[in-house]
Image 1: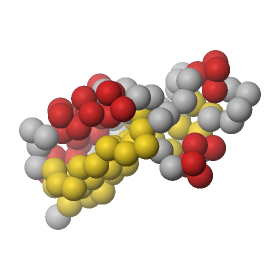
Image 2 (image 1 turned 90 degrees about the vertical axis):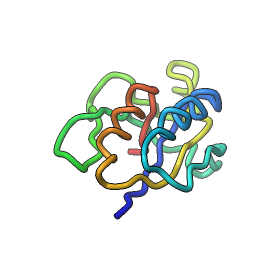
Image 3 (image 1 turned 60 degrees about the horizontal axis):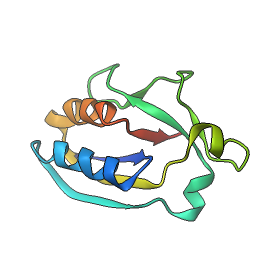
Amino acid sequence: MTKNFVAYFKSENDAEAAKAKLEKLRVSNLLVDEVPEGEKRKAFIPIVGMGTPGTMSTGAGAMGIINTSEDSRDEHGEVTHLLEGKVEQEDYDEAISLLSESKGYESQ
């Protein structure tokens, strides 16, 4: 069984580097793309590889929250690209760990 994931990054290079790391796992349908305009207005939280096995956990309340509203973009930067795909459930926790190491964010 596979699980879907979407991770957001501050640059296309960061997203591509994370994609390369994930390719050692049982993944499929990996796609790097620009963040759609409608999603640029969301807040993003760093992905943290911790918590219950099989769940994507974030450091809710952790430093590094990106709110992409106009007034906070200069202070924190903004996400520009996303990486989405599927990973086998057995590799999910490792995939989340790799996304965390690659400074990936998830939508809040």
